[in-house]
Amino acid sequence: MFLFILYTLVGAALVLVGADKLTDGAVGLAARFGISEMVIGLTIVAFGTSLPEFIVSLLACLSNDEAATALSASNIVGSNLFNVLVIAGASAAISPITISRATVEKDIPLCLLASIVLAALALDTWVSGGTANVLTRGDGICLLGFFAVFLAYSFSLAKQRERGDEGTASRMSSMRIVAYIVLGLVALIGGGELFVEGACGIARSAGVSEAVIGLTLVAGGTSLPELATSIVAARKGQSALAIGNVVGSNIFNIFFILGTCATVKPLAVTGLTLVDFAMLTASTLIFWQFSRSSYKLSRWEGWAMMLSYAAYLGWLIIHT
Image 1 (cartoon, helix red, strand yellow):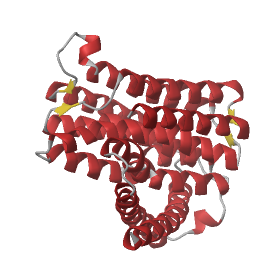
Image 2 (cartoon, helix red, strand yellow):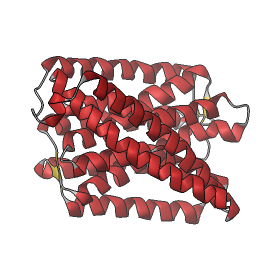
Image 3 (cartoon, one colour):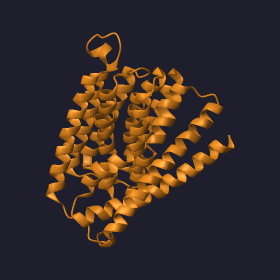
Image 4 (cartoon, one colour):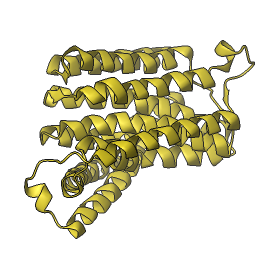
């Protein structure tokens, strides 16, 4: 038990340090090349902080253990719920986040589309009357097709080259930017792995079921990089980076990670119910509605989002 507690503490410390360095490096990169922080958040930061989900889901997908294979989809659904309700919510609760009109009109709707497409492809028993819920190779290729469209959209944004703030970050050397980004990602991913291993060890020692561990601790643990990065970015006033990280990570998780996993090996979507997919879609709709109201996420809206996640978590534990 002591070793698991040590893993959890060391992992959390590494995640916090990594988030701080990654944020500084990402802001420096945006300023140096004249790319908006939103684009950096949607692409480089989102992909980097989604690596833990990719590793966990891919390894689970390649496993011959049916229970482990099912973890691929549940990890992504749980992580995306955590990203929207907890990460965006906590960032806003710490410091109100200003959201651009382009993000409200294009980026968040694309995130909502990803959730709807996943539900339509995964819920075969509801949509097409199938005998089981499965993400087939065809579904995987479809998701990767959507991911290609998302990349094309991101590159078109990057070409607009919005000039960032000319502060200390713009004077950061290229070597320092690369070092911050690489070291930040390594610390985030390594710390996240340690945290997950420690937290799951503690939970198993306390008699918590594998289903609850998969949908909560594993999903929350692999989302630690996004959580730390977005909160640090929000505290530093880099709201576009914080929101871009959340939106980009959710899109990466569904279109790229699940698309890749299902293309490699068809995924049985077990352990997830209509309620889970409905909650995923509803959480994105809540996020979008709050953002549209005044192009800002206020503190009370952030707290409301976190309380919604707590209610869902309570329902999950009771029904599991």
